[in-house]
Image (cartoon, rainbow, N blue to C red; front, side, top):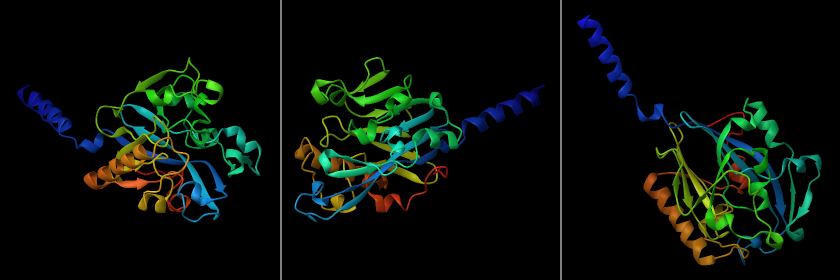
Length: 271
């Protein structure tokens, strides 16, 4: 009997000493959420490459937490856009955008139902990021209070009032273990936010949202002319730079197509 008690105690000790990687995030999928061509690259970096077209990507990210379940970051262009394969003009003709594969189809491909996603967040409320929020009507949405209350077109609300929401006023550690952390990075919009994800093998990744739009834009600290605050944008860029340096993290820039083309896309995943 004494031996049995000792064996049980040893097992409990072993379980208690499991590495931190046994909890936290174990998978990150990069999802195709649209693409486009901007007629003038200087829209994002004033005075640079004026009149030069720029191809851009649009990504969403599905993240699995071993205890908290599925978390979705951004939702891309509406799935309905896929019904127009040639795409449509957007932003007053400054962009031509399309979606060749739906978010719903990509979730189905990896066996995830919309109802399986327990929490989600959007970087900000531009159409290429919130197009499918209501595919998840019961999923808790994390968004900055400043973004939630920012009036939309004709003062319309940016979300359905019945959608579950947690309005943030700064950073948020989603599961309390540092594996998925929302960073407040205003400037592009009043309540823009970015996401830090810590993976056991890949390491730490910062998902930019639109705090930065492409590599040279980042390197030269270019601030798009339509951002709501140049000062906040630059401060947010520096905050991200500090995070990259301190944590030896990678920066994944949402609209940088050249970078996106080098990433593994769903159904492959990062761990």
